[in-house]
Image 1 (cartoon, one colour):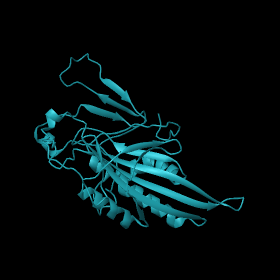
Image 2 (cartoon, rainbow, N blue to C red):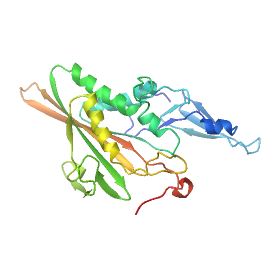
Image 3 (tube, rainbow, N blue to C red):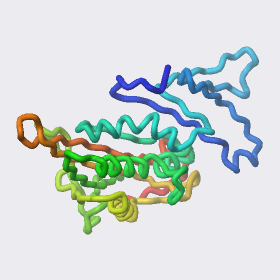
Image 4 (tube, rainbow, N blue to C red):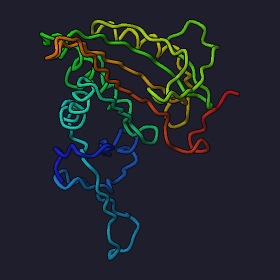
Length: 261
């Protein structure tokens, strides 16, 4: 299975992180191996009998603990963002237990080009594409919402006590009523919008990660493109990129998270 497969509507990409310092100090052993070419993750039971066969899982793409941020973006996410620029909708989200590397993969390390994650790479991708376009006019809008205890909140609205409703229209499908959006004209501007929203997120400490957010957040980038067609008329296409930050997938009893009511 190659990483160039593009026909699936939904792709599952697995990234295995290296052991952290706590695991190294406890002399933990790695029980997972990765076959990048076959797209397989092999899990062995360290306490199992010698004849026990390992469990093999196959995905669209897999990345081991030595994988680079840009490698991951170029191979697995750049084609999706390209499709958004062509007028399609796409969603990227990281799913996994707290401490598995979701934030590093999605956000990375600020001010370090080699370690920046999917989100900053997608920002640069979009605005670099726009700056190189000659015959199209683009409009980029950003929205940011949070889902916490089954309530929807606009992270960019001044009144953070306001709750929003999910609606559906025959022409556009599901949408969030009254969700605010801001026009952004550069990477710096869209990063500022995200930063403002991040400051309003519901964050709670857990035993597994003291900086873990206990909410889901969706950063929505809407890209509108106006282009002169062969008929002499302007044609508009709209693509939407959803960047999703999920709360850790572990059970609350394990994390020790304190949930406010």
